Image (cartoon, rainbow, N blue to C red):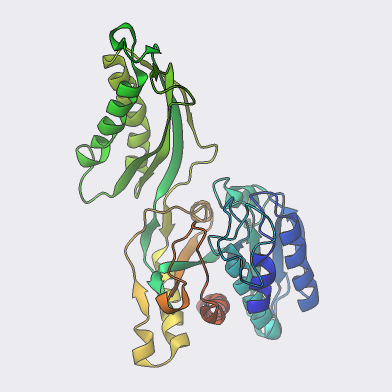
Length: 391
């Protein structure tokens, strides 16, 4: 698993461009003797372990995302650092793919004993472009009754397995718009309609969408992360200001309300300063909340506790609080009856693996990857066994 992860770490590719990554994964599946369908969702792979019943029987899926990020890695001294300038596996997707290959190897060894089928999904484009939706569109989960996803998390101590029933991750969307006014000389502000002052007021006003319009027990975020006046002299008031940011919420209703209110508040505040809001745009693929099915979560928690063995070790299995991060695994929950998303803790300050996701310092605690591979495989086996027992 370590070798697979390090090989993949050296070849990060952006969403829907994972051609070398996909070819590498397919080569490993060929070596394991596992058949697959390719391409699905542009660069995605659907591999199948048929089990004792061949093409018949219940079907459970395991999913890993495979795309990288436009980030320059700081770990240039590592022998397996990214070989592609400005690209990095800064969200652990290399480890996700490696752990799923590890699970594939474990399951292949007992394929003839499986009371059903296991589908392995190597999914492209999780980072903002909704690769899960593309796989669903291409029929990758049409016959799947349950699905499990696994993500490394440096915010959890190494070796902790965390999940929860219900909403585990937020809905997310990105916005941008332009506050447009009338520029002029900085010495004559009364002859302008200053978009900088208007945009600053918009940023402040948008904070009330959460602090004064959203219940304190209904978590949400409105973040304006970019405030761009463009190039120009220090004594010139610009014609416009571009704002960018993100909206997140744990419920779809709050998410939709924040969408509507953000546009209303931005336009209204800008108008009060004699300016207008134009060029409003949102993400091509907004992500809904990731909602775990309760029975699948119970199964994951039981399996994880059994894997860890002793009662003391089983304390590493935790029901965690929801995160305001987002995941396109959420789309599977809309079409697969039983879906569960689980986090594997990799945070260890002594190893330097506690740097955050999406940072150039991110690293994976590779010692936890066998646990992730085993968890994936055990979840699939247990689900099939329970299903067979209930038949």
